[in-house]
Length: 337
Ligand SMILES: [Zn+2]
Image (cartoon, rainbow, N blue to C red; front, side, top):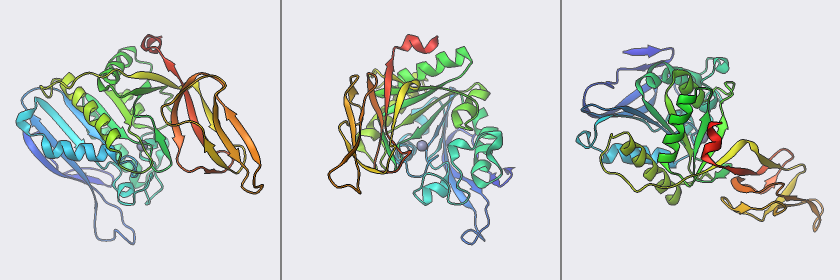
């Protein structure tokens, strides 16, 4: 039995074959007084080769990645692979059970709980277990996200670039192999407590992805993620069949992007859709004043050329709500400078 704080498991990650089991989170409240919260885990292992860790359900209202991991676990046999695939489809199971972004137990955001300042709640206990036991097992990690109930993302890889140049190159290669239509690029700043930064501190290759959103299952986004994970498995020579490659477009969500943010309570009319390429000056959003029928409160225009990378779901907005994110495209060679 391996334990760390409130986490226990006797799951066997090492013996060849295919099996599933649980990592147990102990948490005692009115609903969990005589129980554990079970995080499903699976392993597929055969022969010699690298280990890939596949995770989803970090945010509980993001579904494509969870389904991709279930389908992989159901369809891939040990004899199909060389190496090891470790799968956790519901990293933050309390959030998955409640169909919510963060845990209902402690309001913990799984992807902000890997840092030292994350506290001692159940969400950070899961993060600490992943950090101490699962990241060290992995040569490559793919972490599946979607936009959740609040937003829609372009189907994209999500690449955080850290200071280690060798790791930057290796992660860039994984993003190119994954081959989503877009890859969002940002810098690791070390303060966010995210999974990317934790993997970077271990020197482990890591790519996240964002597959659609809106708190629904999108077949199109699912197919992007499914083809992407098969390409990465083939690139690592864990599986032998090679899906056809797909070229990704890199977009900057760090310094060369603009959040279009509501300054007033309003009803938004969007003039763009997710993934649209727009020119400087293009109309993006008209904001109507719900208390002055017939009045336009504000019009937002693109202040630079770019791609509509994220768009909000609900058009009734409050001051401070982001309406969309406009991101500039990057050439791959710009990423290594
Ligand atoms: Zn997410």
